[in-house]
Amino acid sequence: MPAKLTKAEQTRRTRRAILDRARHLFATQGYTATGTEEIISELAITRGALYHQFGDKLGLFKAVIVEAYDEITNYIQMKVRPLDNNWQQLIVGCQAFLEVAQQDELRRLVFVEAPAVLAADDLTEIDQYGFGLLHESIQTAVSEGQLNTVDAEGFAHLVNGSLNELAAWVAQSNDPERLTTAQCLVETLLLRHHHCS
Image 1 (tube, one colour):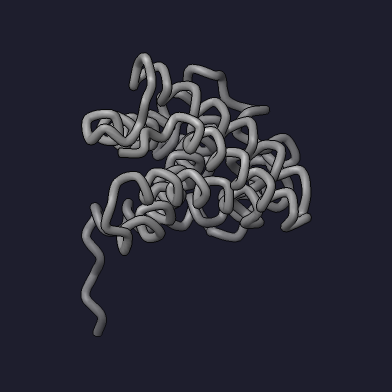
Image 2 (cartoon, one colour):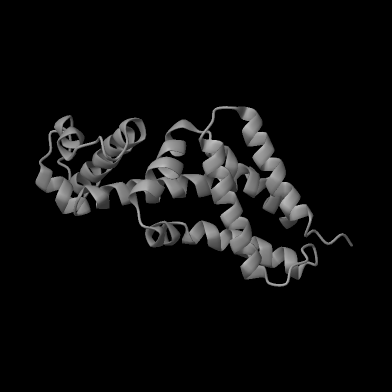
């Protein structure tokens, strides 16, 4: 006879099921076209369980987007981990972020739905960890004498803004040429500030 699930494990499983179902619907239908009834109907849970876990549909959407950003960060870290110098990691990390803009579910969730649904402050807060990694990499490049800029934090904002705009542009098309162009543009931006020793 299988062991009875603890209350905490039941809650964790319910939360995971809701997040997975909501992610699929938000990514395929969009936030506006997805109703809470549709999210819970296949899961055999009550609307109260959804609201208990996430507050409301917007809270659920925000939780889905937080996980999507974590996925992006993990993808970038997987791409840069094999590289042995910070400068290369900075370039490849920026280019990897742009690759995400052509990955189906993440494309719609992060670059179409999130900006349309969430306030700019919410998006900034969700992206804080990723921005922190970018800023740290730029600060290291400045410290190592590889990057010439008047202000590392300001330059991190410049690169981050450029990446977000380029990613939105890449997300509008399936054309791999657009991704290649965007990656070339961000590399050029960084190389223009590269200090060769």
